Amino acid sequence: MEPIYEQAFEDSSYGYRPKRSPHDCLNDLGQTIQQKRVSYVVEADIRSFFDKVNHEWMLKFLEHRIGDQRILRLISRMLKAGIMEDGLVRASEEGTPQGSILSPLLSNIYLHYTLDLWFSRRFKKRCKGEVYYFRFADDFLACFQYESDAVAFRAQLEDRLQGFNLELALEKTRCVEFGRYARDNARKKGQKPKELDFLGFTHYCGKTRKGYFKLKRRTSRKKFGLSLNKFTDWAQKSRSRLTKGQMLRNAATRVIGHLNYYAITDNSERCKNYVYHATQTLFKWINRKSQRPSYTWEGFLQVLNHVGWPKPIIRKDLNPCRRLQAI
Image (tube, rainbow, N blue to C red):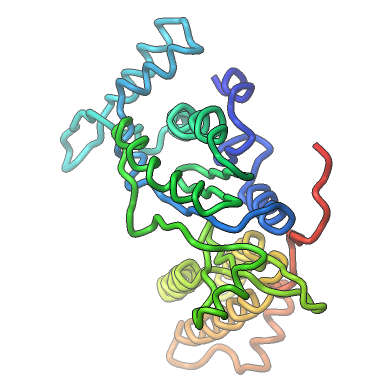
């Protein structure tokens, strides 16, 4: 099914697709806001999307490109497979099967017809200025040149989703002034410039060393805290199950995994903070493996160097000031 639908999916869709990653989405979004006429952004989120997918609509969407009834019956059975609770299987009337390898593709198909095509073929044509749309799974942003287009999109979005049994998370949905002039306009009003949270990063309006506008990003406070809490929880539990060598190597792998995603342009400060707190946490819990401390601080630093403890250097160049590549 994937090769069939890859030809149909819009370029605005990035989630769960081959040769497309969150960094690709962030890169394209950053360059669009930096170099295009963007003054307003609508950020939105669908509440419990994977649990609310309507089976009837899903099968109707699939019938557009799949004519084999055997495939459709098989997918229908997978959708209604249900979940097991306390040893009992409960059939599901809506939503995609949890943990199924097919769920990511089905979610993209559902939102392709629900949102992507509606935006590109209907709503976009009625806008007065430039508009851009980015979606990763059930998180999406829409960028506008004029406020009237942004307000119209926000007003029509809720009705559009309700027509397909989906609900907009109102607490995560808003229209904000964002772009080249947003910082100065907010300060003239005595306000702080607005920020956006998307794909684990907080996007904010900054400046280059020469004083020009630049879109910058840092790890969102929520994701930063969650990642550190998970690391602390892991370190606390691992001290009684792993040897010191295993604990050190596994900790390094976890920090490297965090940096591989979050160590992007303009986010070095948050990455340094993460490595610092992770180092302090590991030193604390590895010394609690026994009643006598395992390492002094000097000895601990030598061991970290031996296991290849990662350094908070930029690993993904997502500089939005680069010129857009020709398509």
